[in-house]
Image (tube, rainbow, N blue to C red; front, side, top):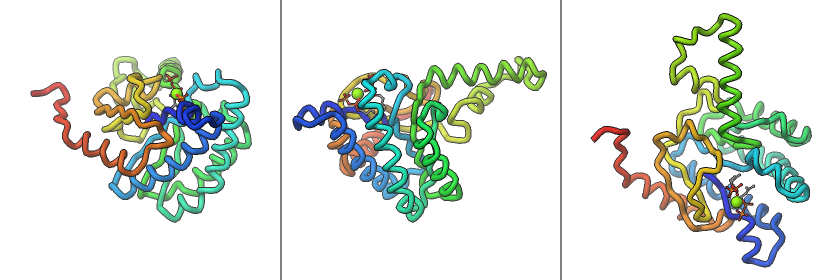
Length: 224
Ligand code: IPE
Ligand code: IPE
Ligand code: MG
């Protein structure tokens, strides 16, 4: 899910942007619960892009603080629900306090198998692909990888998402018809649902509706 529209929601309610992000946090809780209820096995939330570092310092700091609080406050609930927390993205870019909170939660939830909740943090698809290429080039140089043996699977194994299946469904809230550097490789054949609903207003029913839209699609994968 590309969780978009927190700023517009705040503006609409004459509130600071950070209040929009705080309201968005409640949507995360609702949607994670809805995903579990609907039997979704993997849920990836685009929470912070590499491009988002360009936002005003105040907003970036607010988001990082919020993130740290969410991980800390939701850890016991995640464990109770059988959620495994994972991340994709440049974790090394995150402030140390956030990283520590994350790493501890990842470690504590790693045995859970009900839902993999994957947070895309300091995530960018192009940097992900670039780093994968660097990794493969290093292996070629070290004589561990034969260029002629590079398959699509080899590339996939070098991405942040190795071991995570490609998404079947991509949801974007707040109506923007763009991908914004999210999982370019992985969404090759994903079904896309764009809803005008702003992320803080997105709830269980909107999630169920996106799943129903998805279920009604005829996925052909290039066949007939
Ligand atoms: C999405 O909401 C959350 C993040 C990108 C962190 P925005 O903050 O992009 O909200 P809009 O697009 O300005 O409404
Ligand atoms: C995409 O939203 C990134 C996240 C939801 C984290 P943005 O608001 O950053 O994307 P643009 O700027 O509208 O493309
Ligand atoms: Mg936005």
